[in-house]
Image 1 (tube, rainbow, N blue to C red):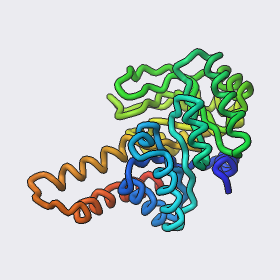
Image 2 (cartoon, rainbow, N blue to C red):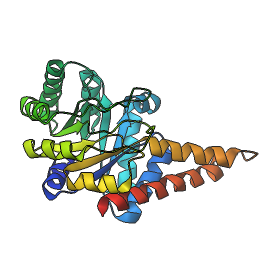
Image 3 (cartoon, helix red, strand yellow):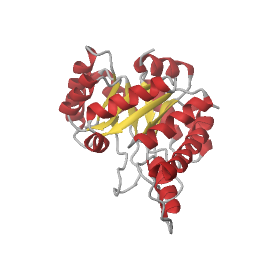
Image 4 (cartoon, rainbow, N blue to C red):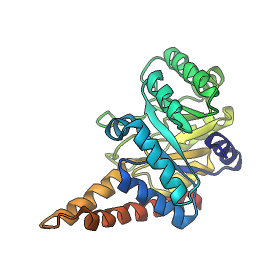
Length: 271
């Protein structure tokens, strides 16, 4: 089943897929071990920074091989693509899904750029995600400016996108205080749109709010910051006052840290 088909199916059923960013072989393996152990589907996400670090072709090849090797049903998604050029490059490389993020541009320009991405992706039968509203990025103000239901409806109808990331009190990175999602606004948006609704910035959102968001219409949940944090904090702990130079002895413990984190997230989402 394609990612576009899977998300559409989950949207109809009121379920959600977890989409997690990976950064190297170790974080990828931890994610897939968790999916394997819980018999779960998983969306593997790559940001432009990760693609610059790994290379587009090595990244997609590694993801594909590991999905097959570990017998996990999963898909590869471009997270926060900033241009039509990177969208096209990823589609040519075999990505199942792309996100074109023109959310910081005007409403009209966001529509224009997103429509172009949708047109290009059509021949690949790829899923296309866009973002509408203010979802704070790292080091930006986390002031809540929720996406309006009218804007969401008009944007989806004008662009023909498959998935829409919305602002409902969520933010990228760690939260300065416990977030309180605008579930009332989510319900309003769900009532007037039929595409998959996406929650970015799930790191630090309480489990019960994630589950309620799914009940109210979210069908894709993005996770990145907690994954990086878990991996690096474990490595820092392991390497403190440690003379070991064999990375093959150190990295598996950090991989396990990722696996346990994602198992917990999958159990929350799948329940």
